[in-house]
Image (cartoon, rainbow, N blue to C red; front, side):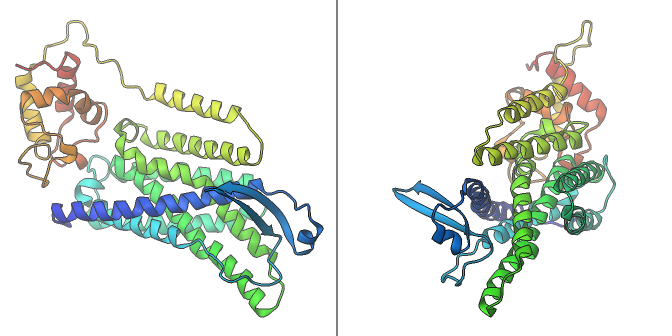
Length: 400
């Protein structure tokens, strides 16, 4: 079954939800980065009166033309302040708008955006059900690990989470189209982050508030639970951002080992976040960015496409041979008058010889070095046609 949506309507929904999503994400990520940095900047108060009030740390800051003094209490102040500012809606809106985008761009266009029959012959509803089920399962498994292994060892918990990311990335690569697989993994981590806020961090805050309102001592465990999940979210941030941005880089998700590339770059993202968290605490571990840079370089060398120089004695492929392939397999979308969409994606048009020649390098990246295009192989481009395109491009992409 195919679910359809008017391309013009889809375009506007994409614009609105993407805009909202990016704004909410900036606010959420900003507060996450700020509060972790603030925690690392705290120093024990010098004033005995502050210690008597239950203050565990303080930080002096300057911003926007003024000085600020920030205090953190061991558990809670003696008297509940009013107003008390909460940070939760930025997390909720980030997830809600992100899920809305997933629905508009993937669930409602699953036959091209999510499903690649050369990967797995899923129906639309099967693909959607697996995706939504994955979002829920990610939280259930992660939360269970935090409540068991995470109570004994953060290092063991980190190893388990890494193992789950590896399994998830590999499994998604066997079920979904390449770009959708990356987004599915990112959406699962993003769901964990939002669920951490909704199910753990905010309830922990409420425990502190209600205890003070009832005149009883708050449970310090609520502080620990909220802090643990907040730190986890901080480390998840850069890996999730990569999965969202990777759609612009088909040489990553279009590779035969795309799942391994995703895992490597997500680990590097978390590693970079670890550097900054230590830097805020006054520990400058320069070997972390150096090893991160080396890791990125190693991945880049590993996935570098083979040389495009034509082999000696190779058969010459003419433009007359490849033009029908482009017309049948590519121009259904990339044309001034496309058949499958309302307008050519990214404004790329492949109607004339000059236009095809100008896009030859990009055609190689998305249709020869990888099978990213056509999306979901909706126009049924064959392996032989891809090789023919590659041979023509290797020989200089010559046109009449």
